[in-house]
Image (cartoon, rainbow, N blue to C red; front, side, top):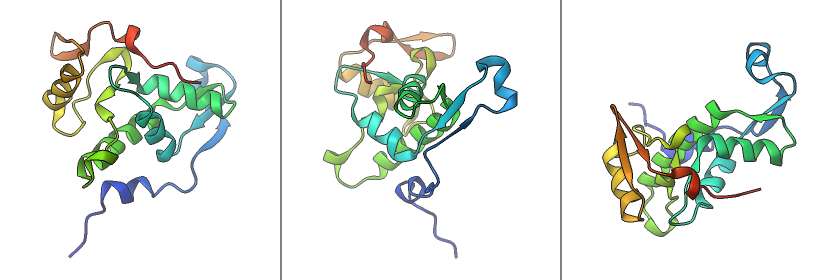
Length: 155
């Protein structure tokens, strides 16, 4: 019988990260020449923990900040999004609520809520609205209204 790894154990499974390397050829058409920073799960979690109540972050913004920190041209938003998902689930399975990472404050690009977070859109919407944010529906997707005005400014 196999034992399923906890989300915290999964986050620990990337000892080779962070790293910086040349932007791969398939991405150069869109991003040009330069370097790409692939974050570690710990960096993504730390960035998500730094978002105070009433403020927001996006996966793209976290990736950009990590790129700046590593002196890279761009940040890998795909890896950042994957780790944000993992951080959210690790926080939800944590026993100690005081240590919880406020993952619901990290949005997808354009201020969109993330259906893959624990509890889906409804849970994220409830937490965001409890902190004073207004969530609006556009088609089948949900967004925080005026999210850009509430983004954290990190270096």
